[in-house]
Image (cartoon, rainbow, N blue to C red; front, side, top):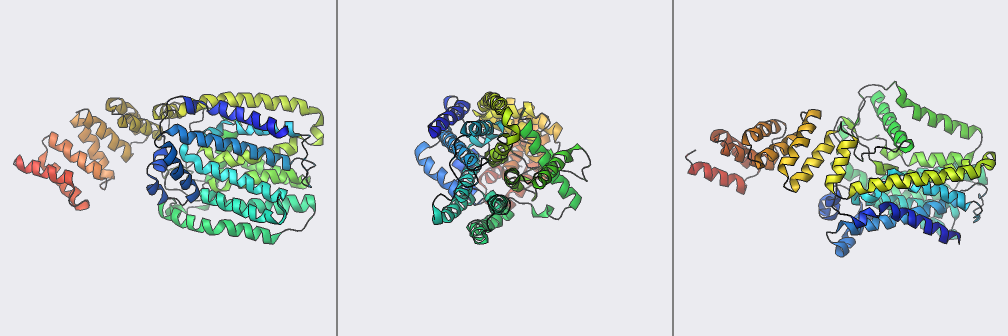
Length: 515
């Protein structure tokens, strides 16, 4: 009955939030197309074979229908919610021996519901490309539960290693999981169960994860990581981590006006302001839990924090703009799945015994609020127009949202409508070469060749390797009868792409015109 009730409630909550993804209009957004239709390009940049396998198999079923892939994400979110509830049951106060005590299941379910419906989870489900985060979080929770509950006796370690390996094959961030298990052994198991630490088991878990991560790191260093910034000033490096953690804490506690795309300024000097407050509060809290010997709460806090380490911008990433910190909402998915361990140890403590009913009602109210807010945010993901329009409204100081909106409109041949967001993007980032290129194309497609030439020439100063830019720039110059400059651009194009059909055609055209 407990399982049936929990499953029914979580199923209703998850599908009530994400139903618009299945009933409204649907398009592939962001990196979705790369994962579904250009998978060979993605495989070359990231080694996530289990995630890629799901897309390969689903493509045989869903084809080019985004709703099918989103349905899979919704089902995975529901299974993750059930796994998080089971994990919370395992770590409830007084359950150190692994007994299946369901006396507090209602309170634990209320805690899990609040975490599952948190608006930070919307991107993980609505974005098809976030499949890797869902799989990584699910296998991580299953691994921790299998190891801590010792479900199959001597086979528990083998099952745990299998889950850890699957998490690692889903996303490279899983390399941090051995540290979570180390925290379990050194903090939870040794202090609460008073048993010796199983170093051999920790070694086996590391062996299931780190060799795979070694290859993933090798691929990332070639395509994603920006090694040129690794040796940056120590104070700036620390400040970057502090600012990232401040952003995490802000979005967790105040999940309003989320834009899914963030451009957080990378610090240029040591931070000395309020941004240190979340970091200091966390350190003081951990010290307090250790001093008071609240080891279950300490483990829950450490586990939730440890899985954030890969996302603290310790390693600068190339896929963000150089002056900005990389940050996305889906980074918080696993933390929210583990957080009930910490919350349960606090809410179900003896000190709060008299307030349990009040807390239960508060959790139910919070779940209702999160469910409504997340449901409204889900509508944003139906099409690229709605998603990127939302980003421009929620984060009007970020040029990337305006660029993505313009790109989506140009793909629908709405060239005139793409001009204004591109002009706005260039006000925010005057030297953005991609915005310059898109704006030049928008003007060219609307036959405003003088404006097109202006922006093509600016884009050409920043990027002389973009073949499409050179092709369109030369064609615009021919329209303006600037034949000599057009020939120079075409010759530049042929040096980089010998035998380019467009360049050869335009050269023959110039010759026929006597130019």
